[in-house]
Length: 231
Length: 82
Image (cartoon, rainbow over all chains, first blue to last red; front, side, top):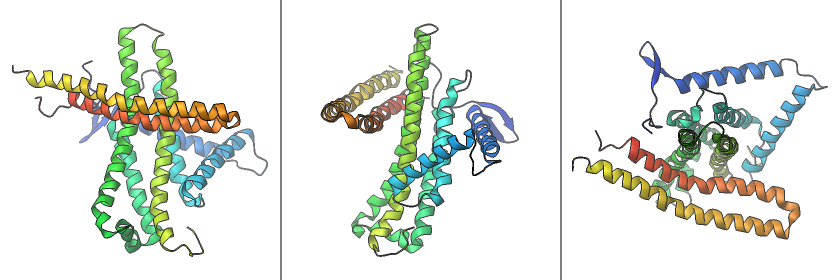
């Protein structure tokens, strides 16, 4: 094993920017998802077609997850949470296509997801509670906890990144090792296991993102439980 | 002994994975045992239990994956190896 899973090689350079394989794969997935969404939602009707029924089922499942986990109405969060889930799922499963390595098996892609979750936690927290209200949640339960709360924000994002990266990368790694040891059909059970791992990791990442955003909102709710509109 | 760092790094990677796998293995064993127990008592809730079990197992397994990531860092991205 002389190929490090921690580095990426640039395929070509676009001006000063090096373009690597995960970047291309993520952009292809993004284009695919966008075109798929446009194609399916172009003709929405009250008497749904088959595709629309499946889509509504899926959106409903995401909505109920958000409602269960975050205890809020799913409207403002559906786009972010749903996109994260669908994208990570497709990215994890994209390694099934021969010659394509899952972009989530590289640390940079996962770091981008972690940064999105980190920023959106702050964004939704500030939007729901105001800047001073959000900063005040760091002093819960006492002001002694301020450094710990700040460290927690960073470490949980980091563990989110490394969890997704480690699980997907180890699947790719094990596949490569088994392929180098044994022949043609032996890696197939491992690939089947990768499918399960990919789906579960996408789900876990999404649930944890929901929990983090929900926690930023819920700490403000505990302070004023009589607020009529629970946003 | 100019490659002592490489030797120690490989040893450290093996130690990280071997000891890092002990805790999650025990934890997963307990989780699966409890889930089996729960399903045996209430077969109706098998779906919910096994779904929660899978997610919990993935969370526990992540601890072992952290050890694997550290091992790979030591092997492939060691800051002390030129």
